[in-house]
Length: 496
Image (cartoon, rainbow, N blue to C red; front, side):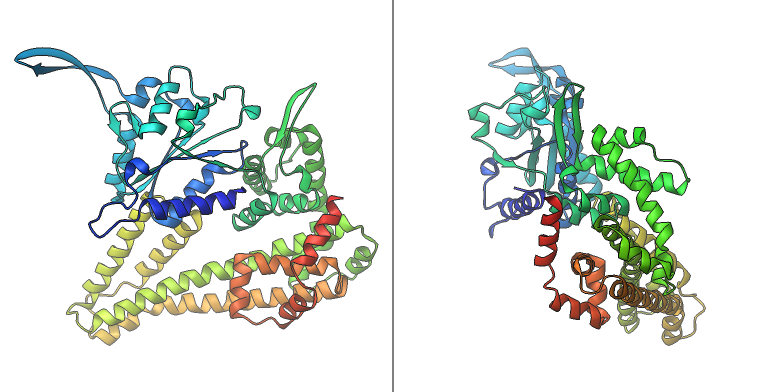
């Protein structure tokens, strides 16, 4: 299955394993809760789906790469303890708590979440001395003599033997105690994730044109050559950083992330070309309704690769407007909800200033706990920091005369926030209309328009924006061009 299907299966498993009966006991006894074993090629996203799933399910996550551990850190250190048996005292060897088990209890103390996932990566690549410990872990859900706390699911991951010489195959006894999920690289699913994570537009555009280069692992006379999903994502971060500092991106640098000479050479050339298209076509000008006349003449003579690159550049620029609107709307909605609850509380409270402060402090504490538990992604953290800055501005003075005055004082920053949202949304609406103007004039009802409208239909920020702000041309083209099936046909042609 692909990584999205694997994630969905993990979510289903969490729901089933953590379901309780009327007495509070788990419906599936802990000893019958088989660990999940994800087997898939390196860099396909096994670790990231664990982080996403734990965050979305609101449970804890403790993650380890087991190859970094020794037998002592996994099962604990031995110590001598005196025990009495039948009237005689004996020195008995016991073990300290495993570092891994201790980290689970520490996570529970830090976050207050008694249920979660213990994720062990590269489990089938451990040393000979640690291998029996890993078998005991999967079979008995414990390290040494320390049990994993009830309510914590075990998920392990490993690579197939063809990708790693260190892989050790599990015996039937172990495999009969786990649920093995085989995960495969899937470019389409990964692209959806990559767009949500705002990976660099040049790389996303390249992969639309060269889908066969998304995931490649080959052995030749020069050794192993490989390109993985992890490589694309990590390189995207570097590419953004290099652009900010105006640093050159050479083939050698690309090869450090995309370890395949042919692909690295091709990507390097495409990045240069992508930047050139960005300058030549003036994407910012297009989105502000100031298209250079020469652009249309060039588009008419351009090949399909160049035309599709321009569409992706346009989408990349447009999504910047739509994502900004989406982020500002989420911020405004959170602020509005806070003010609503404060207004209701004013009906019964005696001290408006103290009530405001109490609610602000409570929201800060809840956000801190969620952030410590790993339940916030970067976007959520950024939004909450901005919200708290606005709430600080709106704090009610203890000298405020009436409850009505207190509420009016509290909502002053909100009005500024609301006005900013209106401005950002208006800019996004204009950019969207200008983008359609260009697409119609440059391509008409062509394959490029299919790609353009399809991307608007699958992007989360775009879908949310279009649901609240009518764009007649979007809905017209969506119906006329049978979006979805047409794009699949176009991309199939490209693959040939």
